[in-house]
Amino acid sequence: MKRFVVAFLAVYIFIFFWGWLLNGVLLKDIYAQTPNLWRSQTEMMGLFHWIIIGQALVVFAFVMIYASGFAGGGVIAGIRLGILLEIAAIGMRMGIYAIQPFPGKLIVYGSVGGLIEMIIVGAIVGAIYKPGTPSFPPGPS
Image (cartoon, rainbow, N blue to C red; front, side):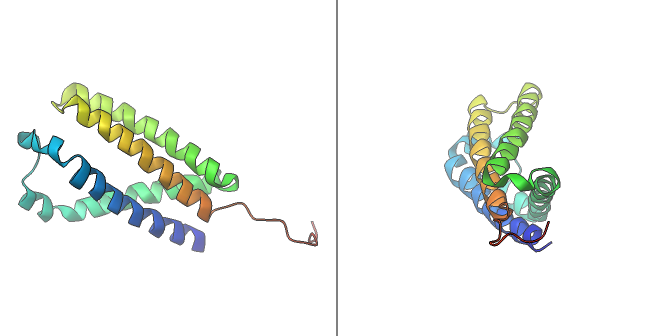
């Protein structure tokens, strides 16, 4: 339980700041080219709690999936899980692109940013859940 809480908090803090860096700084100009697709800054701030909740749910699911079936594999298993989940997210972005008028470069940059994010998230969770090292002398089996 302790590792779960530590992993959740570490990843949540990372995702929060990564989202700000990617969307609020790096992709800001691309978002500005399509103001008709987004809520106003004031309206977004009024709904900010939904961002907090949404990010918490993503982090909870990631750590829970890792702890449920990847926990013995360390950082590499975490990265593998991150890549697999981001492939699913890219598929969803492609579907959204087909039905909403988002700029293609926003989908591409968002997908690249998402891949980087999920690789780092996987590495963080995998490092926290690192496989136990054998004790010396070996304990009873």
